[in-house]
Image (cartoon, rainbow, N blue to C red):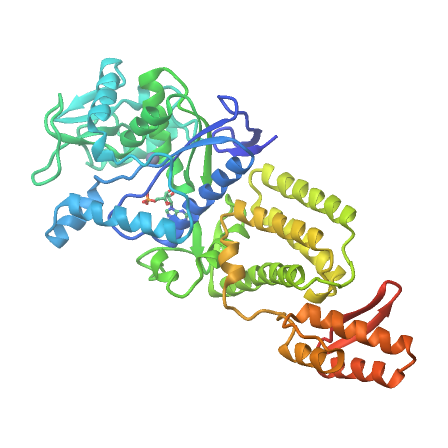
Length: 503
Ligand code: AMP
Ligand code: ZN
C-alpha cells in the first residue's frame, strides 16, 4: 500500500485512489514572466518522479498542470519591456516547456492556460456569488472567508488569530473594498492597459487562486486524488483554492494534498536580493541534467533541499558509480564467451526480486527516493564485490543481463536517462580486451579472427594443450605474455580463467 504524507491531515496516510487503478493529480504550474529557477525545477521534478512511480506501479495517471499566463508580474514585465502581456507569457511558456524537457520532466496529460479558460472561471465566480460565498465590490469580486467555516484547515491556521493580525493593519489605515480583511479576490476589476475580459461585474480578470480551482475541476472533476505544489503554496494559494471550490460545489476538492520542500542555496533561502538566484537553464550550461536530478533524488521530496557545488560533485560521483557498474556488466555481456560463470542464476534471480521489493518498500513510504537509491547502492555494492570490481568476471550472460535490466528499469522510474549516460564518453573504468591480445593469439595459438574474447579462448586452449604435452616453457610463456598485457591467468577447478590485474 502506498503511503503519502497529506498536508491537510498532517500525517502519513494510506493512499487509496478514488477510481480503481487511476490517479488524478493536479500540480500548480508556473507563472510565466521569467525563466524558471532551480527551486521551481525541484518541485516539478519531485512531482515528475511521483507520477513516474505511479505509472510504473501500473496506475493510469491523469496529470494536469496549468500555466498561469495572466498575472500582475507578467503585466509588470510587459510594461517594463514595452510588449504585450500575451507576448511575454507566450515566450516564457515556451521556455518553461523547453526547460522541463531538458530535465526529462514528462509533459502533463493536459496543460491548460488560464487565459483560454476564462468563461469557466466566470461561471465559478458566479456560482460563488449566487451561493452567497462571494460579493462584488467596485468591480472586484471577493470570497467571503467567514462564509466557509473550514477555512484554515489545510494550512492549520486559525481564522480568529489571522483576523486580529489584520485588524491592527486596518486600524493603521490600510482599508480596501473588502468586507473583511481576510477576504480575497476571485475576480479583479481591470486597470487601464491591462488584459481584461467582459464579465457580469464589468471588465476584469480572474484571481490566481480561482484559475487553479477552475482548471482542476474542469479537467479532473471533483474530487480528484492529489493536489500538489511547493510548500510555499500551502497558504494562501491552496487554502484559497480549496475554500472557494468546496464552497461553490459543496464537494471535496482534493482528496490529498502534497507539498515539496523548498530548495535553498548553500543553506540560504534563494532570493534575488541575496544574489543567489539560479535559473535552471544557467545551471544546465555546466551540469548534466541527470546529475541535477540525481542530487534532488538524494533528498526526500518534503525536506528542504540544499543545493551547492559540493553536493553536485557528490551526486556526479554517486551517479558515476551506477553508470560504471552498468558499463562493466555490458562489457561482461559482450565478452563473456568461454569465460567461467561467477553469477549463480538462481541466486541472481532471487536477489533481483529482493532488490525490487526493497525499492518498492522505500518508494511506497511517501516516495522515499533517497532510501530507494540506497537499496540500489547496496545491491550494486554486493554484486561488485562478487565480480571483484572487474568486468572481466561477469560470466553468466543471462544473469548479468537480468541485473542490468533491473538497474535500468529502476533508474528509469526516477526519470534518469541511463541509456544516454551509459553510452556517454566519460572515462570508462574497464575497456574491452586490448588489440594486442588478438595479435598474441595469432602468434602463439594460430588464431585468425579479430575478437578479443575468442582470442582469449584460443590462448587459454593453447596453454592447456602445452600443459597437457608437458611443454611447461610454452605454457609459462603464454601466461607471462598475458601478464605483460595486464591479465593474470588463474587455474580453477572449472578450468583456467583470466582476470584484469589491478594497477
Ligand atoms: P511560481 O511560478 O512562483 O508559482 O512557482 C512554481 C512552483 O515552484 C510552485 O509549485 C512553487 O511552490 C515552486 N517553488 C517556488 N520556489 C521554490 C523553491 N525555492 N523550492 C522549491 N519549490 C519552489
Ligand atoms: Zn494553483
